[in-house]
Image 1 (cartoon, rainbow over the protein chains, first blue to last red):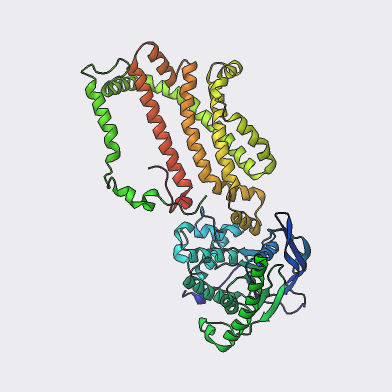
Image 2: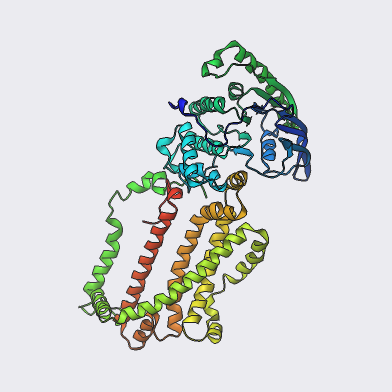
Length: 283
Length: 273
């Protein structure tokens, strides 16, 4: 990716963190979610609270089945809420909306549209004039380094390239908060690292608020300002850890002692929960 | 819709090596039969109702050059194309709506199960009584018959839209109308084309069937008269014409499908041939 100089999001784009109000961008209070599984009530989220400030990159890690993805889907408005409230910029959210842009693990691109067509789609929906649409889409496609592939169809691209297109489309949507649900989970290790680097670079220039769900501790530490560790079901916050590593971050940061310390700490926390989750399944 | 379909030959290379890569092998058997058939003709080895291929071609050419065939083709294709148009349009539109909206689906699904297996030709006398013996009744029968396969295909296409694709559309803030137009229909399109292909074949079958029952023009009429007059060469010429028309229509449909499904067909099959 040689185009570091050309990061010029044109749309209303980049909102710098506003220091004026003390109100967090995202406020989640007593959020509860229950499932009905074969007659028994399963609590996925139990009175879950979370505040996220504007411009924060928050990663959520936890054992599988702890409700971290469910939380993201609820915040996106795709799953019903059984109790509690969520508000973005002081406004209650319940239904899907373009203020909360979602990046899914896979299959989110429309195979009948080209790369360009996919990235332009949110702009089309928002009735942005054609000329501007092309300009914005061109920009974000070049930002993720796929200019040469803009007329290709998703089925012609590799998994990593597809996810880059999805990221470009998400950025073109220009949401207030980016919700990423294990976006690199389906990629192989090398591609995952490349995309992590790229996301870090892009995020550094835009500083948009991100909620990033992952099961990969390294990914979380490398990318995030703050890591929320979920407990096993029912999902609650076990730990809320601030990651004080200087930005921009290079991959080499993973070799630093500070990084290793974070890693060991979070690994211990997670290990406890994973074991607890396993006990629960066994009983 | 699965994302990765593998061609059988790729999955089982040993199946391919059994006959080698000889492309001609598929044409060889029909050609041999045709040659045998032709050779039997002059020796009087064929029963009366089987005519040698050269004789069929000669009659066919005669009917074509006299302009007689064109008139019948026109009459038949007029009914066939209108029946297909109405039937496929209704089937696809209702199918997509039924797949999208629960109440519509719940209304139509049992009805389809009930009526689909009934051969529509069985109620032909009733339809003749209502709509007369002319073009209208034939178009009505075709419309009703073609409705079902196209409905079922569109229904399943619209029902099986990827959840993530729907979520992405809602996330972007797309209206219901846009969601149907730009997400549901494109995702259902591969299924819709499968339904259209069945509907197309059905339209040709019904075109001939209805004309055999009662008509004054059309390819079915030519077959019925030829049988009465024991002109089997004319009967085969009409059948040949139907086969050619059906073949061209099917190929055309596959081309249209390829055009519309360009992104979806990549790394997948491109129909048959």
